[in-house]
Image (cartoon, rainbow, N blue to C red):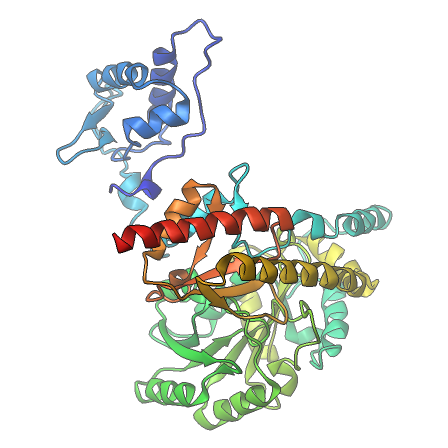
Length: 498
């Protein structure tokens, strides 16, 4: 493997104030990583240039350390380039089979993230990075004071440090039942499962309700293309295009019928309110027509309502679950987007047999979501914190959305076109200039301290879109990042013309 995402992490530097020479410090550090098993046999080391830069040393110092390690039989250069950890018995112990962890890490049944997704996940924590695509609230928009109050409240009353029942805290499920009624959803506590965020709900559905080979239909583009919850469970994916009002129903009907003819059970995953990544809002009429199409074709629906509360101009239409009269819709909600991703708390609403089945599987995986997080969330909903927080948050997000739209008009008027979202976090930017490499644009921006989310994460063939988020950056960071992005686009265009 020669991909940069296979390199071991390098967050260490030698200390010039120590009496031991720098090259010996480096040699001891790498030796310890190898002998402890952290860097397994077959691990590819970064290039000498990359290592020297990360350690803040010159290459001659590094080469001295690497030469000693090579002489000790701990690393080796291979034909075709690259330096690897040796698979030889460098401990001089009796000959035995050494575990090949490098190979084992490639053999698991769960798919790895796309290389760019891995790179994004790491880069978001780099100091000074401008996160133009991050799909979460900025720290200053999160309800820190409110949760301090809630935690103080919990400290004054009895609370559980034990496991909770399989479906989650009854107190929280009662509070959620009341909250869901404000959206038109009638759900008893028995029909609600508490989960550790939406991704866990997706995983439970994929392994608990769908046989291998079943078909999952989803909007194209879709956030789900950037993760592998369904693919890793052996499910087939089918993309359905969108228009301004939502998913195209003729295409959905045809795809559902094809799935049934192949003996598959079709499930549609959809984000009808403030879609990720496009920001689209499905109209009321399209929602009603979608349910009628599902009834006609026999398709079931998994509705992701992560952004429903994040309306900016006017409330979104009723969720699909509120219009569902057949029990055909599973409804997912979460606190990760509107409140805090760190709580790791969400919920799934569905028929009681489904909820009991998935609760049983959840108990086999994590034995329940954090009891303290569930108690805090119960107070959050029951004591009115959620409504007050949303009333404060919406004007802030609306201001940031309008700021980003103004900046786009200023810097991208001749380069791109974009939607005007009515809620959520995202602006779906389409470059309308001459074709250029979005992959190269992503890397060049990252090298310049700007992190974007390229469109091909959400549709593998997309080479013209970028997902922008106005939820994380300050207005000053937005402008700085968009200026760099526009300059980089123009630089790439200039190189293409030459």
